[in-house]
Length: 171
Image 1: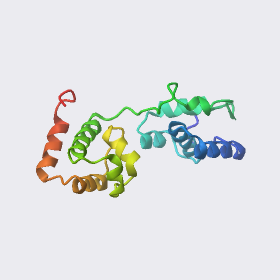
Image 2: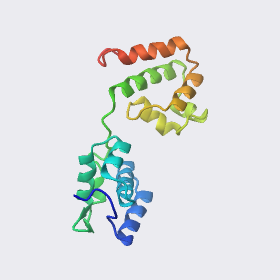
Image 3: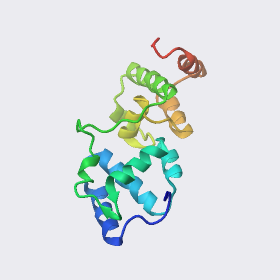
Image 4: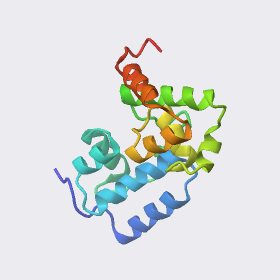
């Protein structure tokens, strides 16, 4: 089984790069960027770990788009989720709890995500939304920023730890 190396001809690569830059659906752009990483020589395992998805999901993506060395006609459009909504990653329960807690703190301060982003949140409003929904984990820099922006005390951070250790159903 081929796990790394060149997958695409220069013309195919150009087609994928163009779609990745211009497609209106973010989930399609993300999947095309994964294909470009594999074409650059990154292994399926490396790409899967980076995106927090399974190696098999990466293999299915490659099989869906390329067969017998050729791009499958219509395969790029088929990467869109059937509902038309972005494909959500299975969120880590801890990320979800952290996101719920921080959203509650933001709302208690009467702030919108846009206002937090304008204050300089690393990654902007879209990234903050992903954090609050538990799709991705906070970085240390982001947690430090939110601690200052929401004026969290050490007691608040202790509450956050306790909140994360609580059972997910008890919000």
